[in-house]
Length: 189
Image 1: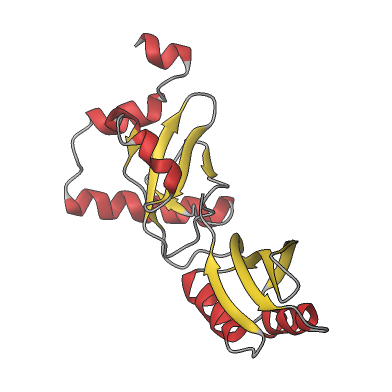
Image 2: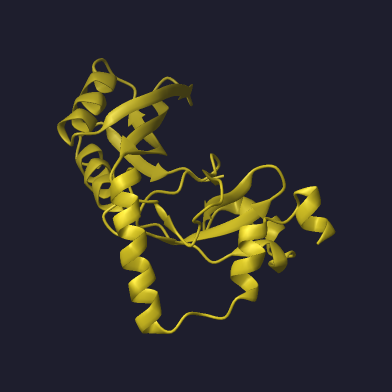
């Protein structure tokens, strides 16, 4: 109980871990009630199993709907959601008591930032071409930075707003199809 009072464990999470699973029939009734309440109060939660708990998306891996995810309980921040293959997850593997079972809800409205790196041949107009390809796939560029490797090649790091993994795949496929693009990959960690 002291851990709950100190904020290192959330009461709602402890209660969920202690309470037995509801029978399927009861769960359906509760889920229907929750959906009616959620419709009245606003958009549905993006992460299933986190009702009443603060949820943050890790900036290191920027999880988006469709990614396999893990949730970790952190003092003062609530549940932080990472992708399963995030390099920063390794430090949590030694503390399974902080793991929280989380899943994406279906049909999540909204946009999510995701990072990827594009390596291109350094020529005039390449930024405009890549930006236009991203815009053509109905994604918005949130941030951009450059890293010149040499006179022939440049790396561009984008933070782009997408709806889910399918949308991200379309954006990346479109960018990859451009002639000056040498490589594109999602950044994590």
